[in-house]
Image (cartoon, rainbow, N blue to C red; front, side, top):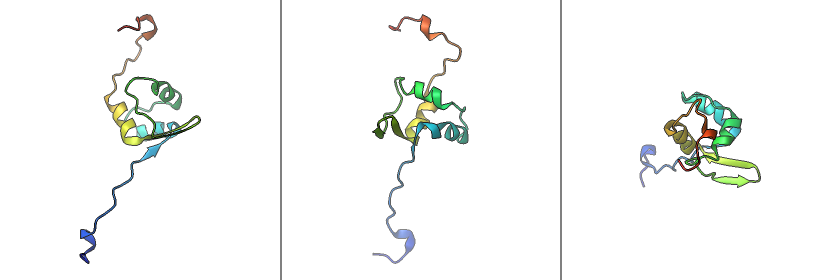
Length: 89
Protein backbone atom coordinates (compact mmCIF):
# COMPACT_ATOMS: atom_id res chain seq x y z
CA UNK A 1 0.00 0.00 0.00
CA UNK A 2 1.14 3.46 -0.74
CA UNK A 3 1.44 6.11 1.92
CA UNK A 4 0.44 8.81 -0.54
CA UNK A 5 -3.13 10.07 0.08
CA UNK A 6 -3.75 10.65 -3.65
CA UNK A 7 -3.22 6.99 -4.49
CA UNK A 8 -5.71 5.54 -2.03
CA UNK A 9 -8.91 4.09 -3.39
CA UNK A 10 -11.81 6.40 -2.76
CA UNK A 11 -15.37 5.25 -2.19
CA UNK A 12 -17.78 5.93 -5.05
CA UNK A 13 -20.05 8.89 -4.39
CA UNK A 14 -23.60 7.95 -3.41
CA UNK A 15 -26.33 9.14 -5.78
CA UNK A 16 -28.32 12.18 -4.68
CA UNK A 17 -31.78 11.16 -3.52
CA UNK A 18 -34.73 13.57 -3.63
CA UNK A 19 -38.42 13.75 -2.87
CA UNK A 20 -41.02 15.54 -4.98
CA UNK A 21 -41.22 18.65 -2.73
CA UNK A 22 -37.44 19.17 -3.18
CA UNK A 23 -37.52 18.96 -6.98
CA UNK A 24 -38.81 22.47 -7.91
CA UNK A 25 -35.87 24.20 -6.19
CA UNK A 26 -33.38 21.72 -7.64
CA UNK A 27 -34.72 22.20 -11.17
CA UNK A 28 -34.28 25.94 -10.84
CA UNK A 29 -30.77 25.49 -9.39
CA UNK A 30 -29.57 23.57 -12.45
CA UNK A 31 -31.04 26.12 -14.87
CA UNK A 32 -34.24 24.33 -15.85
CA UNK A 33 -37.72 25.79 -15.73
CA UNK A 34 -39.25 25.56 -12.27
CA UNK A 35 -42.11 23.06 -12.18
CA UNK A 36 -44.41 22.94 -9.15
CA UNK A 37 -44.71 19.90 -6.93
CA UNK A 38 -48.33 19.34 -7.97
CA UNK A 39 -47.33 19.23 -11.66
CA UNK A 40 -44.42 16.90 -10.87
CA UNK A 41 -46.88 14.52 -9.19
CA UNK A 42 -48.86 14.51 -12.45
CA UNK A 43 -45.69 13.86 -14.46
CA UNK A 44 -44.88 10.79 -12.35
CA UNK A 45 -47.70 9.01 -14.18
CA UNK A 46 -46.21 9.73 -17.62
CA UNK A 47 -44.20 7.23 -19.61
CA UNK A 48 -40.50 7.74 -19.11
CA UNK A 49 -40.69 9.00 -15.53
CA UNK A 50 -37.99 7.23 -13.48
CA UNK A 51 -39.04 4.61 -10.97
CA UNK A 52 -38.60 5.50 -7.30
CA UNK A 53 -35.65 3.93 -5.50
CA UNK A 54 -37.64 3.84 -2.26
CA UNK A 55 -41.35 3.90 -1.60
CA UNK A 56 -43.14 3.85 1.75
CA UNK A 57 -46.83 4.70 1.58
CA UNK A 58 -47.14 8.05 -0.19
CA UNK A 59 -43.46 8.91 0.24
CA UNK A 60 -41.36 8.24 -2.85
CA UNK A 61 -37.65 8.92 -3.20
CA UNK A 62 -36.00 9.29 -6.60
CA UNK A 63 -32.43 9.47 -7.88
CA UNK A 64 -31.82 13.10 -8.84
CA UNK A 65 -29.74 12.24 -11.92
CA UNK A 66 -32.66 10.24 -13.39
CA UNK A 67 -35.18 12.99 -12.62
CA UNK A 68 -32.94 15.67 -14.13
CA UNK A 69 -32.45 13.55 -17.26
CA UNK A 70 -36.26 13.23 -17.58
CA UNK A 71 -36.75 17.00 -17.45
CA UNK A 72 -33.90 17.69 -19.89
CA UNK A 73 -35.18 15.21 -22.50
CA UNK A 74 -38.97 15.45 -22.22
CA UNK A 75 -41.01 17.03 -24.98
CA UNK A 76 -43.06 19.97 -23.80
CA UNK A 77 -46.64 20.27 -25.08
CA UNK A 78 -47.48 23.67 -23.68
CA UNK A 79 -51.08 24.64 -24.42
CA UNK A 80 -51.88 21.43 -26.28
CA UNK A 81 -55.32 19.96 -25.59
CA UNK A 82 -54.52 16.33 -24.93
CA UNK A 83 -58.09 15.56 -23.83
CA UNK A 84 -59.36 15.92 -27.41
CA UNK A 85 -56.96 13.39 -28.93
CA UNK A 86 -57.77 9.70 -29.09
CA UNK A 87 -55.64 7.59 -26.76
CA UNK A 88 -54.38 5.48 -29.70
CA UNK A 89 -51.92 8.13 -30.95
